Length: 72
Image (tube, rainbow, N blue to C red; front, side):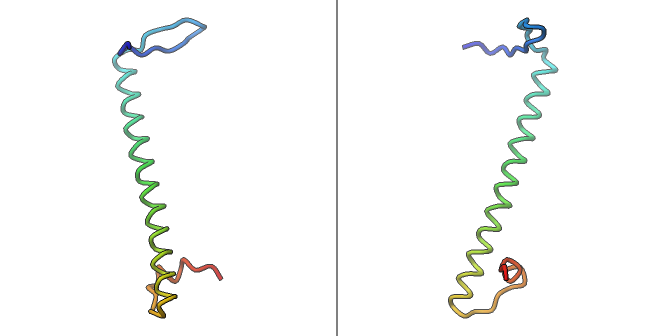
């Protein structure tokens, strides 16, 4: 498998420059970090809702954040 990256311009296969490869790698890294942060945010909301539900079932007091997860 080739380590070279290419782009198509006017139906021609053109090898990417080192700067273009570096830019792609930067965008890839930023995209992965953004996706991981988004996934962590979603998981935090899921965990907060689960905690609120468990406390409601047990009859315990909720934190303000937990209470805000309840839809009335």
